Amino acid sequence: MPKNKQTNNKGKVIIPIAVIALLFLGIGIGMGYFKKNLYTVMKVPDFELTDQNNKKITNKDMLGKVYLVEFFYSQCPTICPVMNTNMKAIQNQINSSEFGIVSISIDPENDTPEALKEHANRIGAKSPDWHFLTGDRTYIGNLADKFNIYVGDKEDDAESLNHSGMIALVDQEGNIRCRYNKENMPILYYSGLNYEDPEGKNPRLNGKYHPDREILIEDIKKLLN
Image (tube, rainbow, N blue to C red; front, side, top):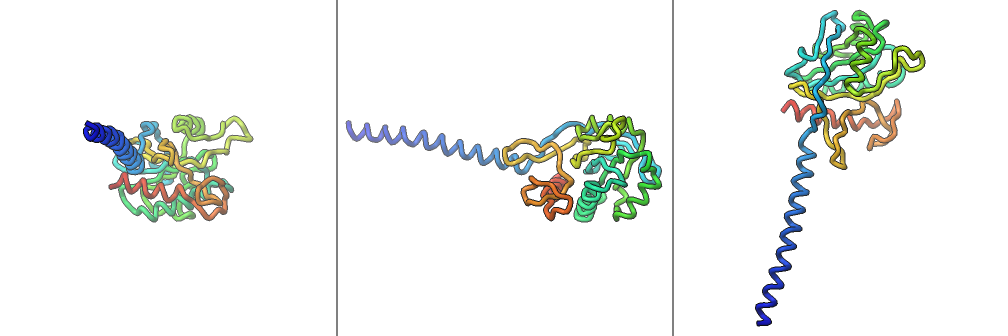
Protein backbone atom coordinates (compact mmCIF):
# COMPACT_ATOMS: atom_id res chain seq x y z
CA MET A 1 0.00 0.00 0.00
CA PRO A 2 2.70 2.62 0.84
CA LYS A 3 4.28 1.91 -2.57
CA ASN A 4 1.01 2.67 -4.41
CA LYS A 5 0.63 5.89 -2.45
CA GLN A 6 4.11 6.97 -3.52
CA THR A 7 3.24 6.27 -7.18
CA ASN A 8 0.05 8.35 -6.90
CA ASN A 9 2.01 11.26 -5.45
CA LYS A 10 4.39 11.13 -8.40
CA GLY A 11 1.41 11.36 -10.72
CA LYS A 12 0.19 14.43 -8.90
CA VAL A 13 3.60 16.09 -9.39
CA ILE A 14 3.79 15.22 -13.09
CA ILE A 15 0.43 16.89 -13.90
CA PRO A 16 1.40 20.38 -12.64
CA ILE A 17 4.77 20.13 -14.44
CA ALA A 18 2.95 19.29 -17.67
CA VAL A 19 0.60 22.25 -17.19
CA ILE A 20 3.55 24.59 -16.58
CA ALA A 21 5.33 23.25 -19.66
CA LEU A 22 2.23 23.84 -21.79
CA LEU A 23 1.92 27.34 -20.35
CA PHE A 24 5.50 28.23 -21.31
CA LEU A 25 4.97 26.69 -24.74
CA GLY A 26 1.89 28.86 -25.22
CA ILE A 27 3.82 31.96 -24.13
CA GLY A 28 6.59 31.09 -26.58
CA ILE A 29 4.12 30.66 -29.43
CA GLY A 30 2.43 33.93 -28.49
CA MET A 31 5.74 35.82 -28.42
CA GLY A 32 6.58 34.36 -31.82
CA TYR A 33 3.23 35.54 -33.19
CA PHE A 34 3.77 39.13 -32.02
CA LYS A 35 7.30 39.14 -33.42
CA LYS A 36 6.36 37.82 -36.87
CA ASN A 37 2.93 39.40 -37.42
CA LEU A 38 1.85 42.99 -37.97
CA TYR A 39 -1.18 44.61 -36.37
CA THR A 40 -3.91 46.14 -38.56
CA VAL A 41 -4.56 49.66 -37.27
CA MET A 42 -7.33 50.72 -39.68
CA LYS A 43 -8.10 51.35 -43.34
CA VAL A 44 -6.05 54.16 -44.84
CA PRO A 45 -8.23 57.30 -45.16
CA ASP A 46 -9.35 58.20 -48.69
CA PHE A 47 -7.23 60.93 -50.23
CA GLU A 48 -6.88 62.72 -53.57
CA LEU A 49 -4.06 65.24 -54.00
CA THR A 50 -1.69 66.51 -56.71
CA ASP A 51 1.90 65.29 -56.93
CA GLN A 52 5.13 66.95 -58.12
CA ASN A 53 4.34 65.94 -61.70
CA ASN A 54 0.96 67.69 -61.56
CA LYS A 55 -0.77 64.31 -61.50
CA LYS A 56 -3.74 63.43 -59.30
CA ILE A 57 -2.83 60.69 -56.82
CA THR A 58 -5.40 58.86 -54.70
CA ASN A 59 -5.29 56.05 -52.17
CA LYS A 60 -6.81 53.83 -54.88
CA ASP A 61 -3.76 54.50 -57.09
CA MET A 62 -1.58 53.07 -54.31
CA LEU A 63 -3.48 49.79 -53.98
CA GLY A 64 -1.22 46.84 -54.70
CA LYS A 65 1.83 48.61 -53.24
CA VAL A 66 3.32 48.74 -49.77
CA TYR A 67 3.85 52.42 -48.99
CA LEU A 68 4.65 54.98 -46.31
CA VAL A 69 2.76 58.18 -45.52
CA GLU A 70 4.31 61.24 -43.87
CA PHE A 71 3.32 64.90 -43.41
CA PHE A 72 6.04 67.49 -44.03
CA TYR A 73 6.85 70.72 -45.90
CA SER A 74 9.81 71.51 -48.11
CA GLN A 75 10.98 74.64 -46.27
CA CYS A 76 10.91 72.97 -42.84
CA PRO A 77 14.26 73.66 -41.12
CA THR A 78 14.05 71.07 -38.35
CA ILE A 79 12.63 67.54 -38.51
CA CYS A 80 11.67 67.36 -42.21
CA PRO A 81 15.24 67.08 -43.54
CA VAL A 82 15.80 64.24 -41.05
CA MET A 83 12.59 62.51 -42.14
CA ASN A 84 13.50 62.98 -45.83
CA THR A 85 16.95 61.47 -45.22
CA ASN A 86 15.44 58.45 -43.49
CA MET A 87 12.84 58.06 -46.25
CA LYS A 88 15.57 58.22 -48.88
CA ALA A 89 17.54 55.53 -47.03
CA ILE A 90 14.43 53.31 -46.96
CA GLN A 91 13.80 53.98 -50.67
CA ASN A 92 17.35 52.92 -51.52
CA GLN A 93 17.27 49.88 -49.26
CA ILE A 94 13.92 48.51 -50.50
CA ASN A 95 14.44 49.43 -54.18
CA SER A 96 11.24 47.78 -55.39
CA SER A 97 8.56 48.78 -57.87
CA GLU A 98 6.06 47.34 -55.37
CA PHE A 99 7.00 49.97 -52.77
CA GLY A 100 6.09 53.66 -52.64
CA ILE A 101 6.18 56.78 -50.46
CA VAL A 102 3.53 59.46 -50.04
CA SER A 103 4.86 62.75 -48.62
CA ILE A 104 2.02 65.22 -48.00
CA SER A 105 2.89 68.91 -47.69
CA ILE A 106 1.22 70.94 -44.93
CA ASP A 107 2.35 74.16 -46.67
CA PRO A 108 0.59 73.96 -50.04
CA GLU A 109 0.72 77.73 -50.51
CA ASN A 110 4.48 77.45 -51.05
CA ASP A 111 4.71 73.77 -51.97
CA THR A 112 3.31 73.93 -55.47
CA PRO A 113 3.88 70.93 -57.78
CA GLU A 114 6.81 72.81 -59.30
CA ALA A 115 8.36 73.52 -55.89
CA LEU A 116 7.86 69.90 -54.84
CA LYS A 117 9.49 68.63 -58.02
CA GLU A 118 12.52 70.77 -57.29
CA HIS A 119 12.52 69.49 -53.70
CA ALA A 120 12.29 65.86 -54.84
CA ASN A 121 15.26 66.34 -57.16
CA ARG A 122 17.25 68.12 -54.46
CA ILE A 123 16.89 65.34 -51.87
CA GLY A 124 17.44 62.50 -54.35
CA ALA A 125 13.93 61.04 -54.54
CA LYS A 126 14.51 58.76 -57.53
CA SER A 127 11.58 56.37 -57.29
CA PRO A 128 8.64 57.14 -59.62
CA ASP A 129 6.44 55.89 -56.77
CA TRP A 130 7.61 58.58 -54.31
CA HIS A 131 4.80 61.13 -54.55
CA PHE A 132 5.12 64.59 -53.01
CA LEU A 133 1.54 65.77 -52.66
CA THR A 134 -0.06 69.17 -52.36
CA GLY A 135 -3.61 70.53 -52.32
CA ASP A 136 -6.06 72.46 -50.17
CA ARG A 137 -4.67 73.13 -46.67
CA THR A 138 -7.97 72.54 -44.87
CA TYR A 139 -8.38 69.23 -46.70
CA ILE A 140 -4.83 68.23 -45.74
CA GLY A 141 -5.41 69.16 -42.09
CA ASN A 142 -8.57 67.07 -41.98
CA LEU A 143 -6.73 64.20 -43.68
CA ALA A 144 -4.00 64.29 -41.02
CA ASP A 145 -6.72 64.09 -38.35
CA LYS A 146 -8.13 60.97 -40.03
CA PHE A 147 -4.66 59.43 -39.96
CA ASN A 148 -4.34 60.44 -36.29
CA ILE A 149 -1.03 62.12 -37.14
CA TYR A 150 -0.64 65.60 -35.64
CA VAL A 151 -0.62 68.64 -37.94
CA GLY A 152 -1.11 72.13 -36.51
CA ASP A 153 -4.27 74.16 -37.07
CA LYS A 154 -3.85 76.30 -40.19
CA GLU A 155 -5.69 79.18 -38.46
CA ASP A 156 -3.11 79.26 -35.66
CA ASP A 157 -0.04 81.16 -36.87
CA ALA A 158 2.11 79.67 -34.12
CA GLU A 159 1.03 76.09 -34.88
CA SER A 160 0.11 75.95 -38.56
CA LEU A 161 3.47 74.53 -39.66
CA ASN A 162 4.00 72.29 -36.67
CA HIS A 163 3.62 68.58 -37.33
CA SER A 164 4.45 65.13 -36.06
CA GLY A 165 7.40 63.09 -37.26
CA MET A 166 5.34 59.89 -37.32
CA ILE A 167 5.01 57.68 -40.39
CA ALA A 168 2.17 55.35 -41.38
CA LEU A 169 2.92 51.98 -43.00
CA VAL A 170 0.24 50.86 -45.48
CA ASP A 171 -0.08 47.38 -46.99
CA GLN A 172 -1.16 46.31 -50.49
CA GLU A 173 -4.84 46.18 -49.49
CA GLY A 174 -4.85 49.72 -48.10
CA ASN A 175 -4.58 48.83 -44.40
CA ILE A 176 -2.39 50.78 -42.01
CA ARG A 177 -0.15 48.22 -40.32
CA CYS A 178 2.38 48.21 -37.49
CA ARG A 179 4.47 45.90 -35.36
CA TYR A 180 4.10 45.11 -31.67
CA ASN A 181 6.43 46.55 -29.03
CA LYS A 182 8.23 44.61 -26.30
CA GLU A 183 5.05 44.64 -24.20
CA ASN A 184 3.16 43.11 -27.16
CA MET A 185 1.19 46.31 -27.75
CA PRO A 186 0.83 47.75 -31.29
CA ILE A 187 3.04 50.80 -31.83
CA LEU A 188 0.50 52.22 -34.38
CA TYR A 189 3.02 54.48 -36.16
CA TYR A 190 6.78 54.65 -36.75
CA SER A 191 9.08 57.55 -36.00
CA GLY A 192 10.90 59.28 -38.85
CA LEU A 193 13.30 60.99 -36.45
CA ASN A 194 16.87 60.41 -35.30
CA TYR A 195 17.84 59.73 -31.69
CA GLU A 196 20.83 60.07 -29.39
CA ASP A 197 20.24 56.57 -28.02
CA PRO A 198 19.76 53.20 -29.78
CA GLU A 199 16.46 52.60 -27.94
CA GLY A 200 14.89 55.67 -29.59
CA LYS A 201 13.88 57.45 -26.39
CA ASN A 202 15.65 60.80 -26.81
CA PRO A 203 15.13 62.48 -30.21
CA ARG A 204 17.92 64.64 -31.61
CA LEU A 205 18.18 66.20 -35.06
CA ASN A 206 21.81 65.13 -35.46
CA GLY A 207 21.40 61.89 -33.53
CA LYS A 208 23.29 58.95 -34.96
CA TYR A 209 20.61 56.37 -34.17
CA HIS A 210 17.41 55.80 -36.18
CA PRO A 211 15.89 52.59 -34.77
CA ASP A 212 12.49 53.00 -36.43
CA ARG A 213 14.13 53.23 -39.84
CA GLU A 214 15.56 49.76 -39.35
CA ILE A 215 12.32 48.23 -38.11
CA LEU A 216 10.37 49.91 -40.92
CA ILE A 217 12.66 48.26 -43.46
CA GLU A 218 12.08 44.91 -41.73
CA ASP A 219 8.30 45.37 -41.71
CA ILE A 220 8.13 46.57 -45.31
CA LYS A 221 9.99 43.43 -46.34
CA LYS A 222 7.52 41.30 -44.35
CA LEU A 223 4.64 42.80 -46.32
CA LEU A 224 6.42 42.50 -49.65
CA ASN A 225 7.18 38.85 -49.01
